[in-house]
Amino acid sequence: MKISNIKVVYLLGVLASFSTACTANNNSLKGTPAKNTAKPNTNISKPKDPVTTVKPVTPVPPVDENFRTVLPEIKREFRGAWIASVANINWPSRNDLTVEQQKAEAISMLDMLKDNNFNAAIFQIRPSADALYTSNIEPWSYFLTGETGTAPSPNYDPLQFWIEEAHKRGLELHVWLNPYRAHHTNGGAVNKLSMANKLSDIVVRLKNGMYWFDPANPKTQGHVSNVVKDIVKRYDIDAVHFDDYFYPYATYNRGADFPDNATWNAYVSSGGTLSRADWRRDNVNKFVERIYKEIHAEKNNVKFGISPFGIWKPGYPAGIVGSSQYDELYADAKLWLNKGWVDYFSPQLYWPVDSKGQSFEALLSWWQSENTMNRHLWPGLNTVEIKVSDRPAEIKNQIAISRNILKNDAGEIHWSIAGLTKNANMLPALKNGPYNEKALVPKSPWIKAVPLQTPTLFIADNGSFAQTSWSTKNAADVFLWALFTQYNGVWQTEILTLDTLSKDIPKFKDGKKLNAIAIKAIDRLGNESDYTARKMK
Image (cartoon, rainbow, N blue to C red; front, side, top):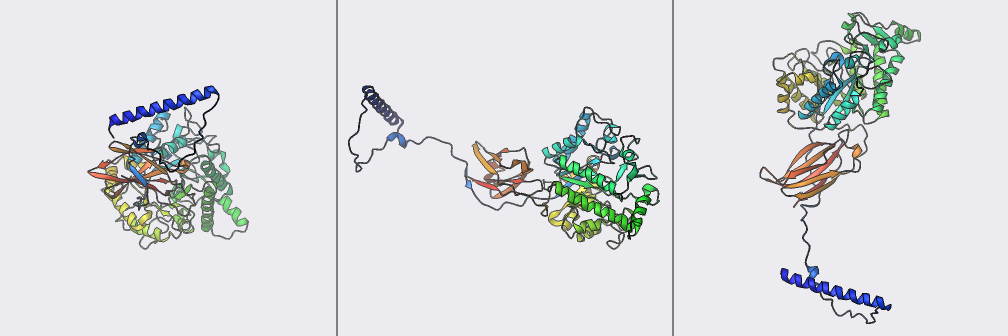
């Protein structure tokens, strides 16, 4: 229709409407409303109003309705780094830093992990019966402020800060506790607030100057249990992590036996029949099982991990030589793995691949053969000081071997973050090699979780971009997003942080056309929601 004709029709319509309105107003003024007594003639068709044939101009939606498709599997691998506070090994780098300096160091480390496609930080918050967090049970750490029991000034909660900053970057935050060490020789003087003093009835002093809780004393087990439960209850952590220190290494007591005569004699007097070595192992076994169950009773989604010494016993597997954690640390780590008392297990395999007496591949394969409950098995790698000429090449080789053995449940933890930051070639070798793309942590199917709701996807035309946003009703249960884009029939995957809720997606990229967009939500355990996918027109 011509524009001039539209104008005429429009004016006629306005005049007709005005005439009708005037008639109605005149009738109402007379007090006698007009009545239409004529019967309708259903045989006469109504004339079409020319105005209604003009459709308003509206933007054409850039997408069709939701559709079902086959999305690519998201890459999964656990990539963690230990961050040690004991003796100021990693963080804080000194015990006299200001709060702002502490925070700056933490942010620098977390940014480095995020930028190099890691997905977890294992942060030591209790190096020796002390706290790098607000606690009513144990004192502030000497390694944080330079004096046991002295709070940072201005006061803040380092653990809460680490959790918030890690989660902003899509990183899991695992809290690393040493369960039995009561005081470290580098931890300053024992003062009235030190647990070595406050719990002296269950603490022994070793010949190297360290103080150690007696693992056999029920009071020790109860105290550490209370510490763990307090942390799990009050903090939004992703996992609790224990290292390899159970009963101390023999060198700590200069070869002398662990001084636990009081609890051993009490056990014998009560009719105990185990040998002293079996009794010690039994104490640790019961403690590990207890901690695992108590963590999940408090918060089922919080994982429990242990990183034991890499060798269970010499000769397991054949050809392995070295220290025996079973006999020296009284740690029956094989039993814990067999029983499933851990959610992830990270034996410290700190030897080169070609080591004759401690073969990395042979040890990892043996631990895998003992993983009867199919828990996560993510070896610890000695990234900082493994004795080889080319550390980056060695670590890359160990990651490749781990992937081959562990298949779809691969992962590793790097000891320590200093091995990543102080070797100029390490991070480029990882990011340009095995860590060239982001990965989700592997799922933990034995931990029950409430399924996430399917996100809603919104797409609008924004010129050369598809303006895309998404949301979900249960956002509190979401940890990450997985965004999928399809160009010329090929899907690409991007893992996004929780606060990323929109993105302008190019309609053309590298000469290829955008065909479809999809979104999934990811929970704290790596579980995926169903997806919403929409085709582009």
